[in-house]
Image 1 (cartoon, rainbow, N blue to C red):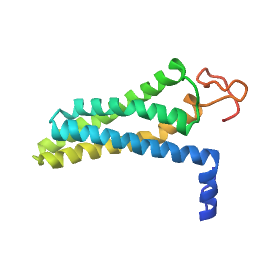
Image 2 (image 1 turned 30 degrees about the vertical axis):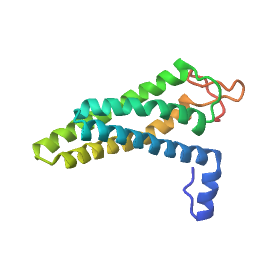
Image 3 (image 1 turned 90 degrees about the horizontal axis):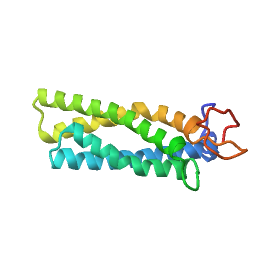
Image 4 (image 1 turned 60 degrees about the vertical axis):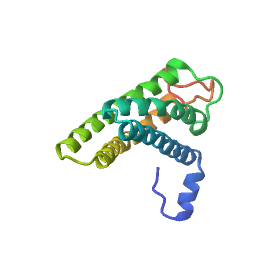
Length: 169
C-alpha cells in the first residue's frame, strides 16, 4: 500500500474498502478503550479494586461490544457468527491483550505505590499503562482480523480460519 501524497489521495484511501474498514476498526477501538477506561476508572479509582481485578473486569466488559462491532460493522459480516472460527479466536486474542494490559497495569500500580503517588495520579498511571499496551497490540490485531479471522472467500463467504487461501475480501 502506497502512502498518500495529497489530501485527495488520503480521501480516496479512506473511501476505499480497506480504508473504510481501517477507519471503522479504529473507531471501534476507541469505543472499546473508552468502555475499558470508564470501567477501570470506576473499579480501581472509585471502588478501590486492585489493578489486576479492575483490568480483568474492564476488558471483559469491553470485549463483547468490540466483537460484535468488529464483526458486523468493520468487516461487514451478517448472520450468526461461527463460534470456533470467529468468536473463540477473537476472545483468545482478547485474553492475550488482557494478559499484556493486566501485566502493564500491575507494573504501573507497583511503580506508582513505590513512588508514593496520590490515588488519582496512581489511577492515571495505571490507565496510561493500559492504553500504551493496547497501542502495541492494535496493529497486530487488525492484521489478524483482516487476514485470518474475518476474511471471506468469494465462493462461499465463510471465514477463512481453516487454512485455505483465497482472494482477499
